[in-house]
Image (cartoon, rainbow, N blue to C red; front, side):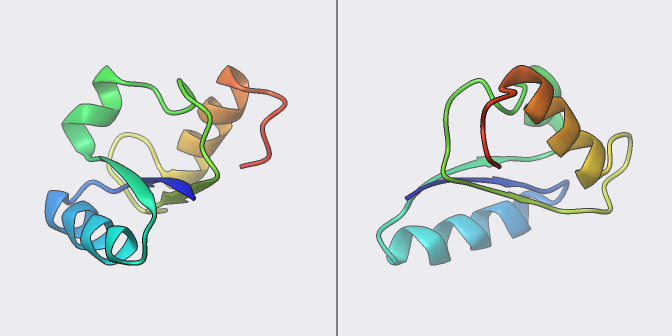
Length: 75
């Protein structure tokens, strides 16, 4: 499964990546600075895991932007 983890704390992203990769998943992680530079939805993924409470852009807003980039995708 291809998974993207988005959190404003790089340590949380790293922890999630380690756990999910140990289960055999392909995981990309985005933290605060990276998510400004690379919009979600640029590539197809199976699962998007997003922290709801982030500064500047909350999790719901992040998912809405991802849907806007890939309207047919079932996040």
